[in-house]
Length: 174
Image 1 (cartoon, rainbow, N blue to C red):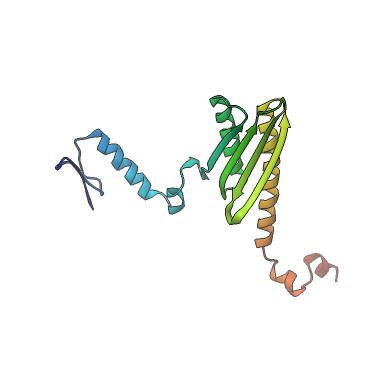
Image 2 (tube, rainbow, N blue to C red):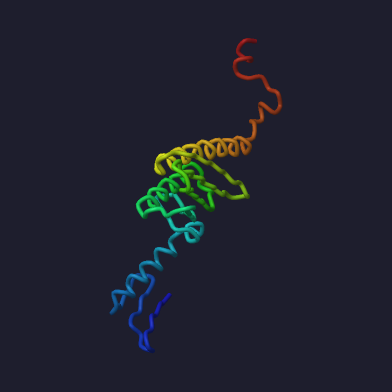
């Protein structure tokens, strides 16, 4: 397969996918590297940016009521929210709302997962960062319990348990 890049009607470079390259533009090289890497990715990785190895990113929306949140605090919240993907990979969006109206700050996180499952946690604390930590801990527990529940339902009992066959201990006693 032969790729061509044209600028104002002139061919800048030709690249053969098998490895032969005739290049004149560094910018085009970076585009080709990106294109080749994208082709090598599985389909599920193409639709989402990759955060780490085997972890997909999720849309994170951070909003504040009655005030503003600094960039450092927003980055802290974003990092904590991304850690939720370690417990359950099928998350579609995370919405974080911080209420700054009173002295005790309220942090609420709404996590949406595939198949319309929503997880909600709220926490009040004087410190925003402490409230975020507590809320994320609550959500980690909810996600862990939900994942265990889903995995247990998919497992089918072995054929010996279904047929009522005696276990190894019962057979050795007889």
